[in-house]
Image (cartoon, rainbow, N blue to C red):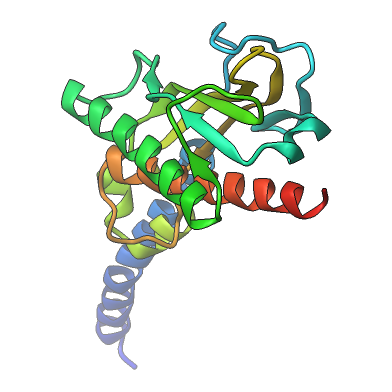
Length: 218
């Protein structure tokens, strides 16, 4: 091979190598961003709960308390969900939509599992109180690529405080402070509202399962 031919070949190889190097650099950068952006928003203790004294930390994103007395409750009053977060890009109408969605999903879950939802305080009736305390915006452009989305990049999230109290005495029967992010397997969600609703769905299902377990253990 002549010197001119060798120089020409090396030039072609260099041109092919440059996009590959750029791609590797981009993926490496995305890896750093994924680590930074896939975590749940911080939990808070805003003063919404009637008591925080019996909460126990079960993970980095969850503190909870459940009284064994809760197993005896078969009906619940579900108060309107409060939006206490001032962070995030949710418009007032989005905040109202998320609050309504949470309450509706919880009422549906309770009824589907055989619990009564009522508006009347009574013996054996619990009152459910919930506040969303922190919103983490979704970063839509990081979710455009399936690879980065599956890794968790750009997911929106939310933190909440909730409790169940006796509807007559006000005694705390259960409490939770927790946060979460939208599922990385839902590739079609590109908004903060969609991710927050996804987290709410996870929480509502967990509440239904826990109350069903308590009822069965009585």
